[in-house]
Length: 121
Length: 121
DNA sequence: TCAATAACTAACTAAAAAGTAGGTTATTAC
DNA sequence: GTAATAACCTACTTTTTAGTTAGTTATTGA
Image 1 (cartoon, helix red, strand yellow):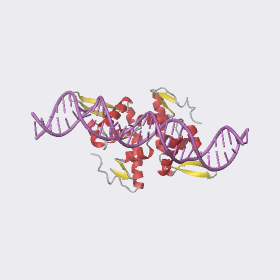
Image 2 (cartoon, each protein chain N blue to C red):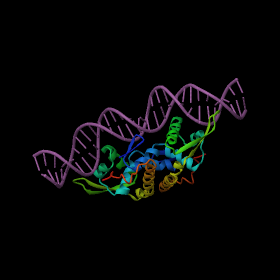
Image 3 (cartoon, chains in turn purple, cyan, blue, yellow):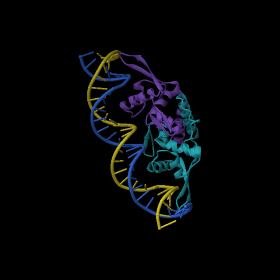
Image 4 (cartoon, rainbow over the protein chains, first blue to last red):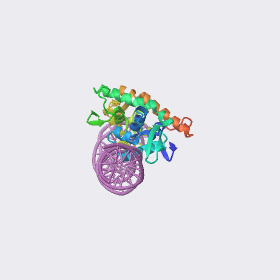
């Protein structure tokens, strides 16, 4: 067993999952990795179905775990931009793999995602 | 939006997560990938904390999604062995990446997993 | 000056995921 | 013949995760 930050993990896979698990985190990270859109409202517009509660909660956890960070563009009004930290960027191959594996899987099921792609703004 | 098997996905990342998401699936898959132990009781012994309910539930879902399969070694008594299908094997780079990224992360936090490794039977 | 937008937060509820406890059939090992 | 092991299943409860609704401060644009 591995104890880290008051949590117990059984193996390194478990450790990684502790940081990127859950319904939204990898989507947020992939979004930052791929689209380089980064304001709070960009996420809202591009992650269909996410609630604001989930969005700000997940952003906070990702910040806490130092996978993302934000620049405060202005205080009044409050304007920010999120970006991947070095640690967040180090997961780059993962984002790429998961995405292209998903595309292949869709192909196997006769859905041509590339052709049908009108999802993201 | 992508509709597949009565579920709605927003992008290929989401599709992949639909198959491997959750608390146990990647651990089970990694286990098959890495340790080549494959009976029901091997999983029980090597995934600390998993309940039997979770184990059989997750194994079933992974079978349904064709990431793993099993050989029936004998019917009476019931003896089986699980293994990764071709599809399950195609996620190999993912298992490797997640594991080694976890090890690096532990290193950054001054935990030498390799040195301390006495986790798996 | 009033609506829209940005970037949030908080209280509450609902749904999904996971855990607990117990049971089944069958075999081998002592 | 009794305990241990293997490979499960079922009903039920708890915990975790996620969704809903509403509210805040501040600015810009019509």
